[in-house]
Length: 396
Image 1: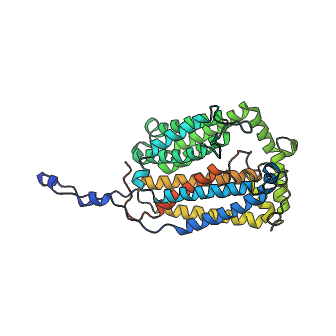
Image 2: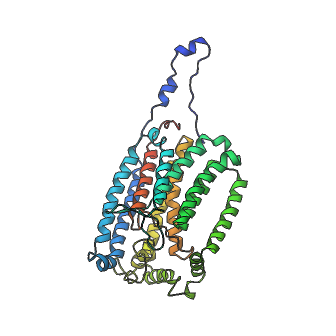
Image 3: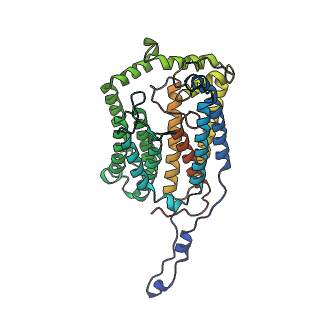
């Protein structure tokens, strides 16, 4: 997949006095224009998200904080921080980025461990956030980026060993497994599944043998079943997913309210701001279930527009991936795209009742600072790769 640089190598005594022209050029990177289509599509989705956060959160914000713009103003603040992060990520030299994989792993590991200390509040029975006073950080959102940077490094530099288990497959599985184990202690079952999904698709892209892929599917299904049966609340969610109307006021309540919202929207929706389900019927209306409110207010047409925009976004990302000339760049861009794609697919599947609730936000649409900043950071890095028209930076 990579195109090796052709270097002029001298032989004999004269070689040590002759500088390599190709070796000098190897340090240079040719830059083209950014993929402005990708940026425009992201901005469009983000703008729709801001409108929907304002619409879906105004009632609960007014009731809780006596300010119907409370969540909207915070989301605007997160958007500004995300925009700065995107700009930095789009400009950062790849040689510098490629040195950050171990540091990113260490930093995110420390942040995850902090969630298990008294510094992290317990919210809805889980300890997933670190409170800073003016805001909270959910480390998991940045763990995904760190894992992608590490996996891209490992699979590109150890590509020759990816066909073996102990030297090629086991190390990335072990590293990802450690993070998944910490997430399960929070507990955050949904995020552990997301990390496992990133590892799975990166292994496919990285050239892992098909037999190991098949075994990972078997092991993954068995692990999900075991974890589901070992926790009563997960079993309740699973039963509610199978038939939410068996417990309409309990475990199935949120999913039923989501169905009501989508059914009420029809084809063109009831109008932006006119949702009934956001009036304390649908929990997490501005977070995980913002697509339900969007479907109610904008109808099937609005949902179809969002899906089309995401398809266009992923198509631009795909074009960037295939035009990379270096293995590590391809894998990094692929992994960053997978972060956004997996989050969007899981959120939409939950809202439509195709998957048990997982607490996964819809990228660029759901309220939440960590997810929004991390998503815009991913887009910024992908934009960085979009301008690489010459040889990429060294992977070392």
